Image (cartoon, rainbow, N blue to C red; front, side, top):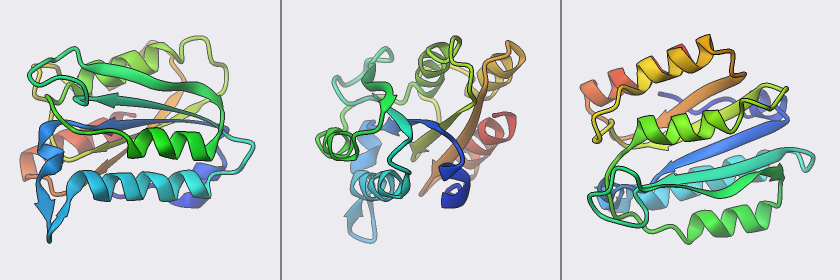
Length: 172
């Protein structure tokens, strides 16, 4: 999946980032750990946001190995503090599983009361490893009337992983 155009990002007042911090993010692409690439991409996206934006951060797989409930809201959706948000991202150290479905569900649930459409940007290198169906969940959340647009930045993915991430982006 491709990165969303910066111009499109700027038109959204609220952006929630979800960072994959599963153990596989330590794998390397041309000598650089995937987590380093993900952090760089997210930092660039944050820098490009207007100072009037609201932003938040959710990470998964960053606290415990083998725990499918390891999803944490690190920064609630609030007026952006680019330095603080970037520092939280830089401090994340991958360890665990890939509970994509739970992370999207927890993130979207917080948007039930938000009137404006929120942009959710998921940065991941793989597919769900905790038995959920993230594509079906995204469709359900949209049907429930939660106002969000989901962009997925997937990198170094297999065809199967690409199919799952693309389905999520298409539904969202």
